Length: 160
Image (cartoon, rainbow, N blue to C red; front, side, top):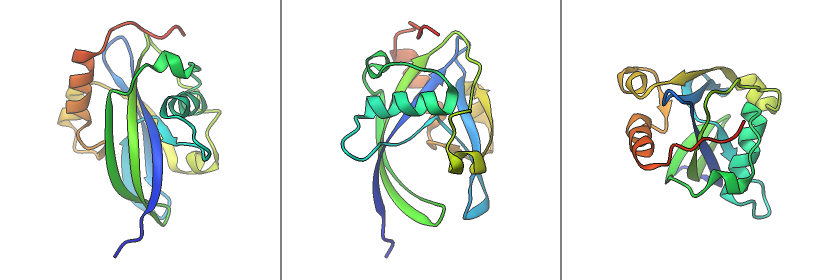
């Protein structure tokens, strides 16, 4: 039986004016051949960090985009996933927020050590690219999620 480490996380669907979502390319250090694309975000800080505060913090650290938790609005999706990373199995409850920007120059200067060691790049993906790719993307239903989110969220953009 797998012993899961419980974790809460917040993730961001950062969407540009063309409807493309930012994903990072990375790999699991314990399994270097396990490569994948994923949204900005990560674990909430111990002590009760809210999902919106965690999403805003992670967005600033991973992309350089600084927003207040209030500017993120309400989560647009939540799920519970189970996965291994760096030799530890996690059961993660995560909430997704959507942020629209006209464009954004990604700044990864705020990456922590594990991110610097396991993230190899980034790319802005269209829904069509996500639907057609054979590459591993998380969440696994990202094309459908992005389609739903783009159809149901306001088009107002964060001021950058």
